[in-house]
Image (cartoon, helix red, strand yellow):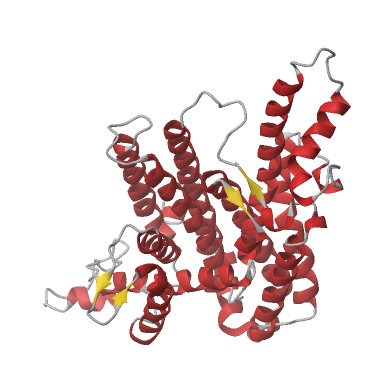
Length: 410
């Protein structure tokens, strides 16, 4: 059908096909259920990269399609990680504490177990009592709901005040960056309830899966990350392909004119801002169990700036461009900073890639901006497209001349 999502956005089927082939290849070559040619650590790196691609899609929706340069979307990513991390840390500590107290002559009461859990978790910051924000930490369904609700509500409240006041452009970017900085500084405090600078650790130890090897857990998280990326791409393509997509592009290009035409601009912007915050939260909830730890440094404003750079390098306004940018930069970053590449001796000076990686990233961003403003994804525009004219069943011209096809296409 010509009005279907795949007809309006043919890149969707191509992307899903490439993603399926990629997942199949990693599964066959990974250690979990395959031949073991790909190590468990690299499978985790690939799984985390897929999560970063998902949050890049969210950034592309809000910036590339709607024109809102948000420098705070990695805060929503981190909040999703904190929400699932609270359950992971509570459940794992509860298992350890219960096994330890079970050896006591007198069986412990539920309150004694909870107090012991609190001491284990918050002893590092000099506390023992559970803060109010941990009220649902023992419930996986509740924390999964908070993965969506906390980033979504924060974005809804912030966006309502910002868009209602018609803050736009660089001022809105500064506001989103200020929100991220305030949240990060608050979480650095020991009395924030989330262990301050220590953050939440040991998240790779999944409760109830102590006997499952990390090689199998890593491939399962990789599958989950790929599924989330595929569904996120479908959702984003659906949003940008119809009338809604035309409106948000209009807001990006000429907000005043769209408002003059009678569209509720603020409502559209608020919806996109909130939806992308939820997508970012889900991506973070999948990322940090694979990373194993989360702390407030992950939510620093620089992380959101990096996110914008990824999308710009890949090509904003193109969903596949955001994926290309995030995936490429993430994998290159792992290679340059993971000690996998040897240092480059230049005689009087030795280039250490760990020290020079951020310089190379900034240089790459400048070069792409100057010489490829449409990003890497824009290179696909160079591929010639041979399409036949839309004749709709009618004879294209009055005679058999050589210009009939050209006339039908004009």
